[in-house]
Picture 1 (cartoon, rainbow, N blue to C red):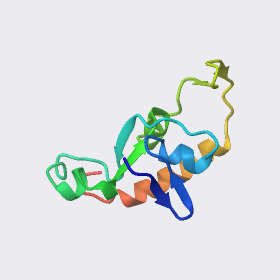
Picture 2 (cartoon, rainbow, N blue to C red):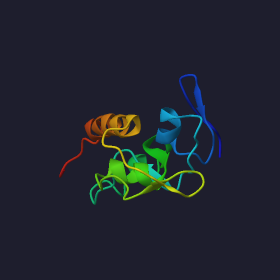
Picture 3 (tube, rainbow, N blue to C red):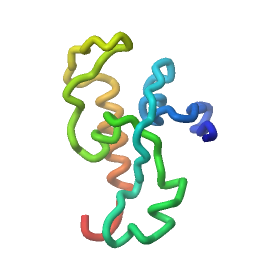
Length: 112
């Protein structure tokens, strides 16, 4: 895997792209490959949507849940495995909400 470059920011391989953009000092492992233009029954056979690297994004499970409006994670933990108290509008949640709206604008396809 190659690092990704976003402007002057270089995102290391295997790291959640959104989390790294928010806080480069705390890289979170990416667990999910997300399709920026969501797959649907009408576009799943289109390789420009389903297989195009420009349409794929490495995300952690929490960011992927936000993107798909599954809500916030039930719990988050620090590096030592201790639960972190949830706060209503953290910087991360505000940035995720903003990027969600940008992603929704990109997802212009029939049926949704």
